[in-house]
Length: 78
Image (tube, rainbow, N blue to C red):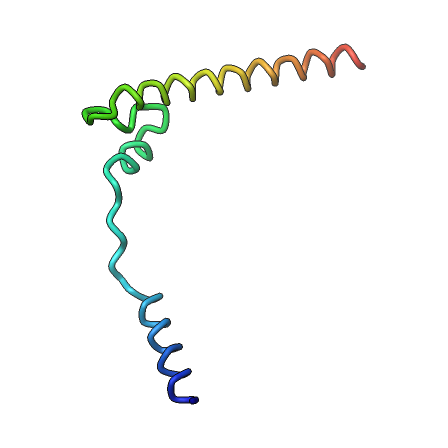
């Protein structure tokens, strides 16, 4: 029983120490290079990528406006 447990632990250690990195998806790689860009540009899903880009920009704008409102409210409260 000990031998099986040691074999499993050794196998897990070898797998964890693997030097080969997993392949990176081209869309993920493009998004990492330009997080505000369209990671799906040039693919069939280009339109969805543009919609995602617009949604991100809208979310950023809403966050900026909310932060500005918080600052105004804090200034009025003091």
